[in-house]
Amino acid sequence: MHVPDGFISAPVSVAAGVVAATGVAVSLRGARRELDERAAPLAGLVAAFIFAVQMLNFPVASGTSGHLLGGTLAAVLVGPFTAVLCMSVVLLMQGVFFADGGLTALGVNITVMGITTTLVGYGLFKVLVAALPRTRRSVSGAAFVGALVSVPAAACVFTLIYAVGGTTDVALAKVAGAMIGVHVLIGIGEALITAATVSSVLAVRPDLVHGARGLARTLELRDGALPTASAAPTAPAAPTASSTTQA
Amino acid sequence: MGAGHAHDLYRHADTPLHRLPPQCKLVAVLLFVLAVVATPRDRFWAFGVYALLLAAVAAVGRVPAGYVLRRVVVEIPFVVFAFALPFLASGPTVDVLGVDVSRDGLYGAWNILAKGTLGVVASILLAATTPLRDLLLGMERLRMPQLLVQIMQFMLRYSEVISGETGRMKVARESRGFQARDVRQLPVVAKSAGALFIRSYERGERVHLAMLSRGYTGTMPVVTDVRASAAQWGVSAALPAAAALACAVAWLAGA
Image (cartoon, rainbow over the protein chains, first blue to last red):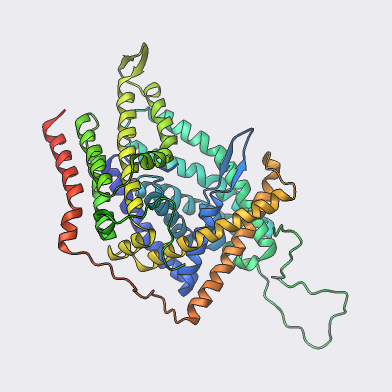
């Protein structure tokens, strides 16, 4: 979905650039709150992770493969502000250093793939987590729905930008149909892999999952008699490596 | 690690273009691409002028044409889209090689191909003549927020480490007989992604602690100062100025 130069008219590209810059500026503030002074190294490493995960292809149907966009995944794992920063940085890198996505279209790309996916995905995730019972399963379920909706939502925003500043005269209905149709399919893949990834991180390091912060039970102090040896206490963040593939 | 990774696109050489401060080149490329995008699509000669300008820049930077062409492949998905346009767009049709195609779609295809290609080539020339680290310093000089620049620095330094881990995990999966055939293999890929996230995050924590123990206070020390003189700004203004002139003439004079 990387938009090249010349696809969207110059004024609209500049306007999208302003939107993207505002979003990034807000996220810079928010990320300091999410990660305090660890923001730079952690957000940098998470951005590198997103970059690597986008290279991880998974099979969709016979012969074709898709890859993750990662907006919702990053938002659930490290928080929405850091996620917007990471996505923006990845897109900026791809635009400036790998010539993937035009420089003037950078604003459009960040608005569509960075900000929209994160906002929609994380917003929906938050609403669902608040509504559902506080279990791990509902956290991954909420991540599934968030990711599922975020990708077609990004396609909708792209179509909207195209309607305002598209440089070709393809009927809007055709563009909308093709974009949203294709991205509903991509969204399903994104949702499956996002939910599975979140649940696998939850199984090993639930404390790292930003979206599951409310899940951990507070440790309670027991007084006096030691528990019997057979009854193992249920510690909230016990690392259990059994259900992961630590290759 | 601190010495600036030579990345995919960079070509080492010592030319006037390589010596120009990164912030000048960044601004020049951005303004150039803006001028290209703002040009009306039916002024074909203007795009010829832009291509000649880029060719001149490539000649100064001694970037061979074959090298640039090999890198242009990132554009392919949109080229495919552009070729579909004449058949998708509505409006009056023209006859090309015996096939009725939309006139407007043809223009649209040309528009995307020309502007997209010029943009890609400009970015390739920028990346081919400027080391990554210098580009980041240039962005910092252009008042990009420090935190953002730091995040990019970390991402760049560690993207090879993380990609390396991804590669090793892939080898480990496949040497245990894993083959990604269809959706049923998705959980395995997802667990790899989860493990990768944990490894990346924990590495980030270790990096942060290592930085703290070396006196990190939230800002990175400035080791190399890349100041640009007025003369250097003047030299780098040549490309966008010429492009802006062509753009202005294209608007005023017509085809």
